Image (cartoon, rainbow, N blue to C red; front, top):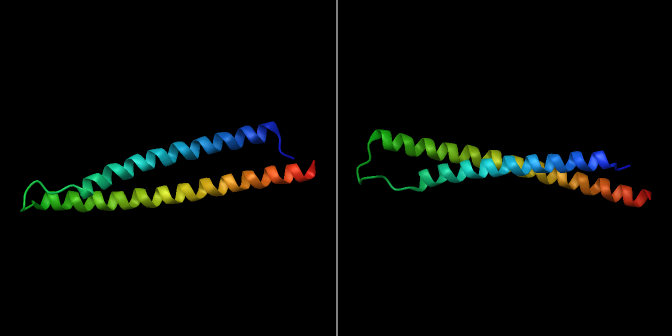
Length: 91
């Protein structure tokens, strides 16, 4: 049976997933912008090249984390819908 406490808990979990995905999206966009940015000159320094590569790696890492969080959030929402459906059928 779906209780008020269960619904409140699941809503809180949804909010956490949203907050985490928002933070990861911001970080991803930040590092992607750095990666996509042009070098300051036609002959970039080794430091600029290294920073460019590191930004790409970080963008990829945040993208993967965001993808995982979104999958988990969707899974959580589907579980909630199934719980609601079961409760409707039981009543």
